[in-house]
Image (cartoon, rainbow, N blue to C red; front, side, top):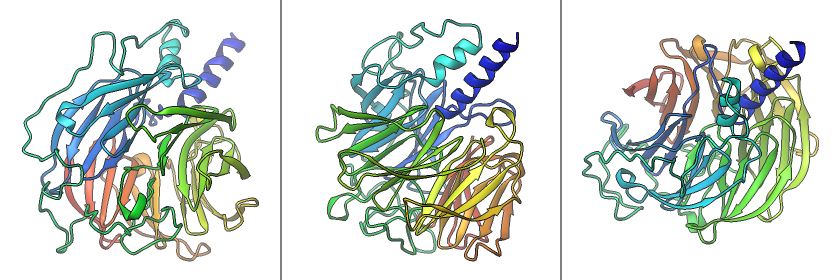
Length: 422
């Protein structure tokens, strides 16, 4: 009985590390990904939904795909890459209302979260729960062709809407130099993205933007994925048919991946692992920061890394906290501050001295972290149970237990809600 209980606990931890994050009630947490002006929201074991955000106050659902065993996605040009159990599948999403499966790379991931979940429910761990081909389940793809007046013929089309915030479109990509705190240059700007993204060639945005709970990220023409132990690299030179390049074992408990200044920061239950990807071919280990066993996404802004550590349940230690690290020397990251005024932190975004922390049932905390020795909470949204956030330009996109929310973040300490979709 003791061995069985121990095995259940270990597999529960693996379930969390593979991207099937659960809240305190056991509900699977949705993930979010921004593709131009389309939000992709994945609900593990349920579906992937596409929403048009071009008018923030009038969000519309424009399509749905059912991919069994899915947890994460990433996009490059008009292609979407998603996990289907142990496989990687590719979709053409030039028209999200009619997404088309293109390719499948089988048996890429060490162990799928869905398989472990099924085993915990008494099913055979080695049984193929997914089946089908080309990214569809055994019963085929279920695509909801909702009516849409969007022009998807041109992926760079600017005719998707006219919604603005203070006269400025929150999702405007016209300025390719809008860089993102973790852009390829490593620099930040006043209207940047504090989430998983990277600038394309000549400033043109080719890839999308993920939240801090992401396990997939695209840098240049490389797709980097993690399962619960490996960093896996694909070449996207032929984006419709990606080529597997390399698998590197990182640790037994990795959970999230973030890109900043030519480096991947991989969050795990035992620490943060840093890999150099400047040559974009062969990831090279550079350093790590160890911490007590807890669930942990990590984001980077400038020379600071911010790590939320959620204690309790299968995550290990009971205490929750946010650590701030000095990563100016990636070979020797140093702890600067441990902030303990959080209760159940999940995802986060940081930009220009402001941290947005999704604190689960305790709401969304907006923290002034300019001086890590004197962190103060400048606002708090208490009416939602947030899990992850994308901070893009002057907009916050938040996924929560209650649905997803859009906020005007032009003044991050005084957020204004634009819309909510259940």
